Length: 167
Ligand SMILES: [Fe+2]
Ligand SMILES: [Fe+2]
Image (cartoon, rainbow, N blue to C red; front, side):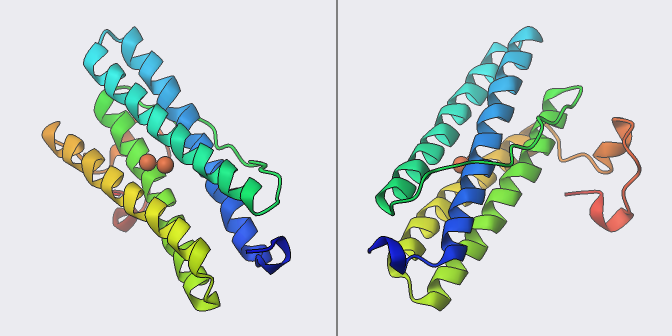
């Protein structure tokens, strides 16, 4: 596909995807170090593996943007979220993974409407991987007895409405 054939919104989806993936890299890398500090080496190793997976996603997006003739630029890194224990970290990560899943779902649907099959396939494969990632994360959360109800209340954040508190 030539450069001028790419819809501007597809480029915007790619830019936001890169921001979200690099946000995940920063978050999981920080949490791996935090878990090591807490003495939980097994969980730290698992978070480090996740950091690498997210970095590979970011790299795929960078390569794809270059192949379309655009300069990759992630402009919106979200701050790392904090929690007092592993279960809390995993709950925060589920929120981030859900953002990624929703983003790739929307990008895939948009490319389908546009009949842009190449970008549709690109976003679809990332969507599949993030859904798989989300399922693994939820399985780990359940192993630990989570997700906790009203988790945020424990961290001193404003109480969320009942319908939004369980994520
Ligand atoms: Fe990812
Ligand atoms: Fe992920």
